Length: 398
Ligand code: NAP
Ligand code: MG
Image 1 (cartoon, rainbow, N blue to C red):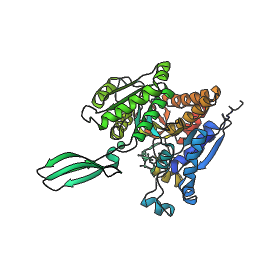
Image 2: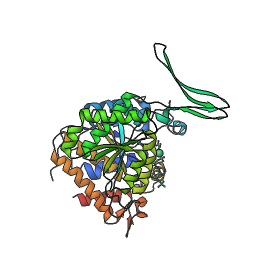
Image 3: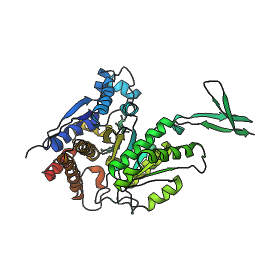
């Protein structure tokens, strides 16, 4: 069988621990036998981040800007324990944070639905993608315990020295106080990323906030989204047969639960934090969540939503054959190959991505899967090691 050709390389970001092991197996069993794979390889494994003083992460992000599509393996975010374990000179920043900052991107998380695993919400037939704004609000807050009676004020001092103030509250007793902010530039790039993603996947975009209560802050988010949509996206949405609408967050929650899914739900930072856990859990498992970072310029970086599965890695190091779920990482590869196929007008490559996904889901639907899915599966299920599962998928793909 001739291999499918590529014209532009993918940016390949290798990672750590169990997912690094799976990475090699996925390429060997499911990609390289079928595709004449071209990648620009960056080793984001912690030892190489240490050896390059984390320059490799920056280089990989810049390569993504240049080439447009990346596929990333899960990576360790260094903490004090990892500094000791790997003999690090520094607690290197999270690679995802570095990449996100350089691409100015928004993260979209979507579950992979599979026949035989019913979502907890029975009406959900299609995946729900949560687009979480990843800047500001309570994640960059300033807080204060109010000890007793007194006046709390909001004060803004312009560079010209001019001040604006608002009374927050005249305290008659003790309480608490918090200040939050956001930036026009960040909200705008969030809106661009959501609309770009909605067009790319051909799904409606919903945005929800609480502008009835937050008449300046949330109202501003709502206005920015509408302005960006009207100015740059409305005709293309019409052409694609998809829509954008704004609604109140409580209304969105009620509508999402009654819907059959299949929308991009753009959330402010806190709402996205809470709702993405709700959606992931209701669809089944963290090992079945994909994640893609989309920049406002339309660059895409695909990965699994889960981490490096450390506990399984230590078992692997003891010589055990683990049953770690590779599905989200396979879908990171298929997502990246499909996008490369679309951008380079290579329908054969995009079609291969579809076949790879169908072979993966088909193998599970037949009752062959990794251990984590066995308990969720309705019907007889056989637990395979990661490698045997990948072999089964490869066989189906052939
Ligand atoms: P994790 O790697 O997602 O694993 C947590 C637990 O979830 C695992 O122990 C396992 O449970 C289950 N699990 C997750 N993915 C699975 C899979 N593919 N197949 C089967 N089970 C799976 O999270 P963590 O242990 O909190 O973090 C480990 C490392 O990953 C950390 O160093 C963290 O910094 C990093 N991390 C990276 C990313 C990223 O690169 N995007 C994201 C999150 C975390 P059982 O052990 O019960 O089987
Ligand atoms: Mg959370």
